Amino acid sequence: MQIELRRVSHNARLSEETECFAADIYIDGKKAGEVKNAGHGGCDDFHPHTLQTILDAYAKTLPVIYEGLDNDAELLVGELLNAHLASKRLARMTKSKLVIVRGGKCYTVGPFKAAGFERDPAVVARHVKAGDLCLNTLPTVEAVKHLRAAHG
Image: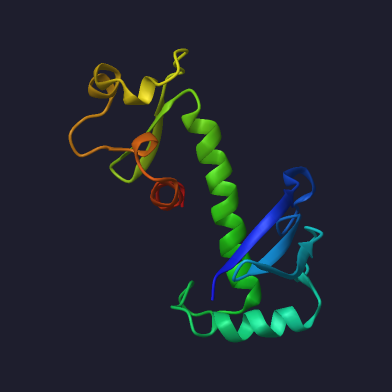
């Protein structure tokens, strides 16, 4: 089963205890419903409500996300939302800077004005040392995983 969030609307200013967001949930390419959270510490609101039951059952088949917590629809959606937000952050960062993971920490170098700076071997060689990981040159999904690991 492939679960994805689309049409994600996130408002960091309104996020107090939880993320304030709304999104459409697609299962295997078809819209299954919607999820939202007002950001005041409450649970996610799924529409239709049966969608939460379907996602709860699916989440239980996945590897444990957080030690000591049972997987459920909210953890699953939270992970999808966090990956979406990290992907957007990565896109902003790599637009004009090299993003490097060095020793488990994330660093940026730049800004660079010329387009294609991340493909210029001279630029990369000047800033990326042996053992570094340049996120600009990785596929987005892999780069997001490294960014999330480096940022915690």
